[in-house]
Amino acid sequence: MLAVDSRFHEHIPQILPIRPEMKEHFESEPAQREAVTAFNGPLQAGCFILVVDIGHPAGAPAFDRMPRPAHEYVLGWA
Image (cartoon, rainbow, N blue to C red):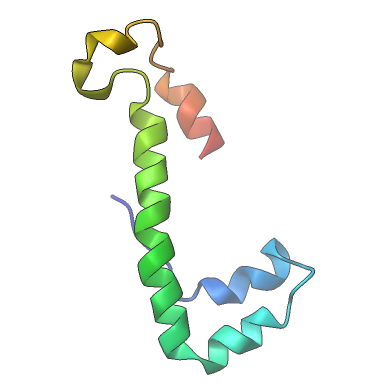
């Protein structure tokens, strides 16, 4: 299960310490916060799915030379 955090802006001071004022900006602009969530959430979920499934897209023989990474390795980075 993958989900998005609509209150992501609360973590901006820790994640992006050079722009802590963005927390207040997203707090005061709920429409923009929802737009960012709607765009970035699926984008990050898609990247995660690609990383987990890399190596054998649809079992294509052209990708046999790319070994499938162990789930422990991939999920250790997530």
